[in-house]
Image (cartoon, rainbow, N blue to C red; front, side, top):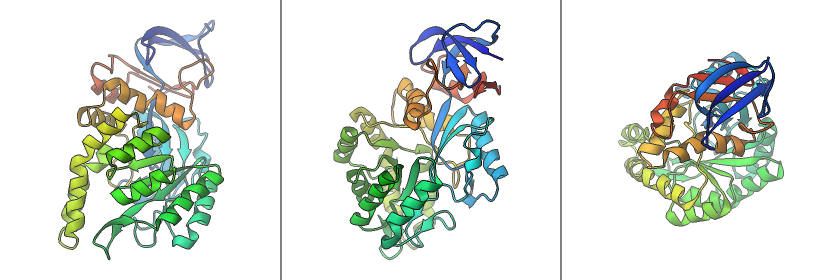
Length: 359
């Protein structure tokens, strides 16, 4: 059955009529379509561009498709209709086209240095094996590879790059040669500089970014997914580490405290920014709206730019067309204008995924 929706379409800011026929959008009237919304503000669904439905909260890798499905449903029910899984220790390609789950862009497993990442999550390899492992994980995903660019080095007592610069640069080349885009986890100043200059496609977290490096990202079109909700956990990480690694603890707090200014500078420089929560591990699933509010309230990014980062621009980046002729039949309807009060993104009136009404 065809569906009909009428409301203020964003970002066009015009009252429009939209028809959903199966999993496609048309702007041409469809006779007999059922009207499911008349009024409100329309977006093509939220996106969590850094999520791990292969990891439950607490950092525990999932062990079944049912668990992956349940975590995807938590995000879906919050209005997230597209997810980029930024690394999963459990493969679930069967869910790529699941009719009742968000659209999925996936990396394979994290490619990480030996004994310097979350236990059981990544494929841990030395420098000689990185490029080949990246190629294998490109095949395991559906368009992305996830690299761990840095982590605490207990011998140094602080953050340090995962491998040498030549190896990390070769990892990005290997991802591109395999037809995948490369995302990199970075907290430190040194690792993020190596990876941005290597041509990585997206920086995850990016707490160590400098103004000079932000300008490089803007020129290259390198994306930033700040995961501000995750950076808020740095205080607890510092408290746990302080007795053994005081320099690391101080470094993490300094990175946390300056981060809103880093994100604001990136936005002002024109760096593409996308909303991601880092759900899984220390962050619960379903919190994309809270990440949006942090970007607005703490980093000072205007509400409409945050909406773009969580919706139409993020979907375009991931290859999921929005509410345009021939686009995908995903949308959320909000009762008030989210540009005036971004808090309304916490509670959509209507959620439609793949042409099916979920709420």
